[in-house]
Image (cartoon, rainbow, N blue to C red; front, side):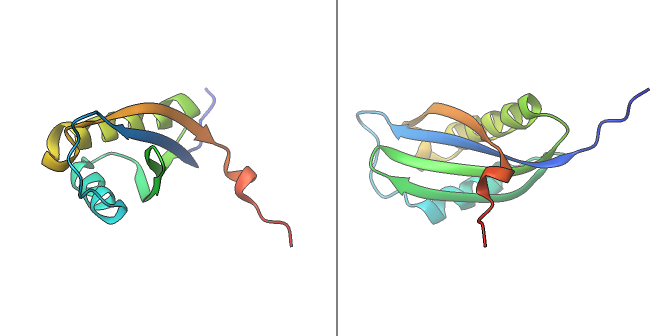
Length: 108
């Protein structure tokens, strides 16, 4: 039997407001809401968010054995955030992607 090893993975989730979304959401509040939605057993290690012109980009760093599992975990997490956070209920997930961590390496 081959043992799969877990690696750090980064899933990026793009969020956009619906037409009637409430103002007042900021990146720090979004990160806090994300941590509040993490369940025991979720392999989440770190969460970052930044505002972009059309909404937010959220980065969820996870310990995951494979890319689909990491992306699925991050998407499920963000779905809980949108469902459970009163300030985020009028937002929606518009994209998700995996970012290879080796692409984040800076040469030096």
